[in-house]
Length: 252
Ligand SMILES: NC(=O)c1ccc[n+]([C@@H]2O[C@H](COP(=O)([O-])OP(=O)(O)OC[C@H]3O[C@@H](n4cnc5c(N)ncnc54)[C@H](O)[C@@H]3O)[C@@H](O)[C@H]2O)c1
Image (cartoon, rainbow, N blue to C red; front, side, top):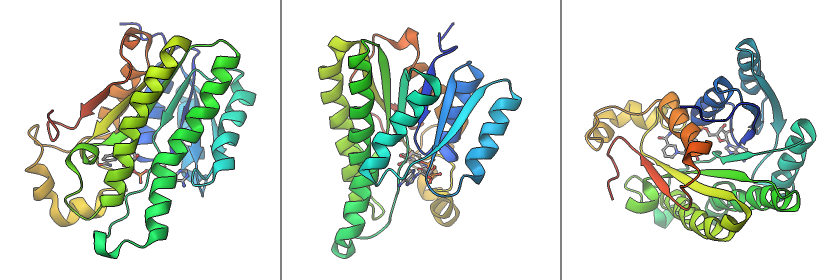
């Protein structure tokens, strides 16, 4: 199947490692130009850019702290300046702090909401403004979690709330954006092998595996391939959906 991604330009927030890296590689292999957003050190972003270029692809790295509203807007500006058009926005960056409800400090709550939810609103707003102005179709894909539906079981109530917000925002944006030919979808992840889950998997792998009918945690490549389809032309009849990519951990 031709996914018709060749020559399209895509921003992947938090693209330099983990799930974001898997998505960047999948896009680049299909011939898309990739904007790899990173937050602090650009070492892994540059490494990924080189890897993509060695495969014959096109990539740039853009620094943006998505906890900062100005950076969210600048990310879209920078991407537009580099590639002219930005067709795809993948909101992947996120944080997963751990604290029980009685202990969560307000600043930790706020930071989680800012990075996991408010940034999705701000980058999407800047993206759709450009696309509407230029009468250009687009795709937004938001990365959410099974926790949006199940709630947290291990001390991540703020995270679960932020990811539930992403699901609802996805639906509202999909309704509003359909008339502009902009699709907005989400993928809910279960457990993926990344820096985010490394410690949790080391300390209680069985707990997680027992919740996954498929019997293994996902790799970033698994998720990259699913994301690829969701932002492709053949998926154009899907909007407002949250696809569960959880190995069966979440079944609705
Ligand atoms: N790994 C899992 O099991 C799992 C499960 C459900 C959902 N998710 C979601 O998948 C997405 C990717 O997570 P991951 O597992 O690859 O984790 P990760 O920790 O490896 O990667 C997170 C990425 O987000 C970026 N990021 C964090 N704060 C940022 C900020 N302020 N500004 C810009 N970038 C920032 C990081 O730099 C990193 O690139 C997240 O949204 C996460 O919530 C992951």
